[in-house]
Length: 220
Image (cartoon, rainbow, N blue to C red; front, side, top):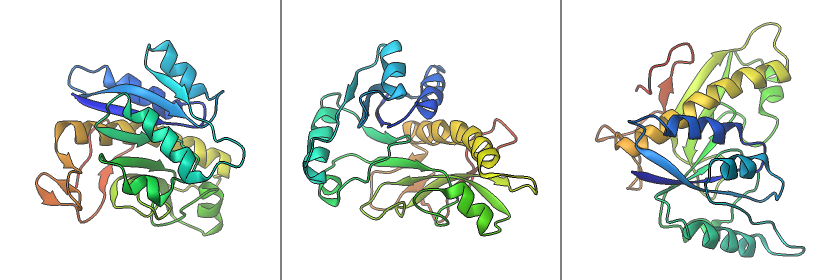
C-alpha cells in the first residue's frame, strides 16, 4: 500500500478527489498526512474530518525559504510517506530541500505543460489563442513546473470560454487526473524510482493521457 503525503494551500478539492479514489478496493494507496503552509486551509479540515494526520507549517517572519522547507519536510517525514503529492500547494520549494528528499514528489499544474508554467494559466491560454487547455502532473524539480511530465488531460477551448469557465472545466479534469496518476504509481505501472520515469517498464517519452469524456485510466 503506497503511503501518500499531500501538500495543499487551499480548499482541498483535489485532496477530496484523492481521498474518494483511495477508498476503492483496488486503489493501492492511502493518504497518511496532509500538510499546509496556511493554518486555515480547507484541506486541513478535510483531512481532520477523515481522521488523517493534518498540520500547518507556516513560514515565520523573516524565515529563509530553505529553513521553512526543512521544517515542513521534517514534519512530513513523521508520517513515513512513499510519495509526496502537491495538490494546490502554492509555495515554491527550495532546491536545497528537494536535493535532500529521498522519495519522489509530484505536482498538479493547471495547464498543458510546458505551456503556461506559473500562475494565471487559464487567462494566458485564452490570450495566446490556444486551441486546447488542460492540466498536467509532473515530477517536482528545482525548476518551476519543469520536471518530467507524467500525465495530462486535455479539453478543447470553446469560443465562449472565459478564464472562470475554463478554470471550472479544467478543475473537473484535475479531479480525475491526479487520482489516476497516483493509482498508476501505487500499482507500479508508472515507476518513479529512477532518474527517468518508466511506464510499463519502458522510459516515458511523452506524458500519459487521460480522456476527460470517459472513466478510463491513463494511456500512452
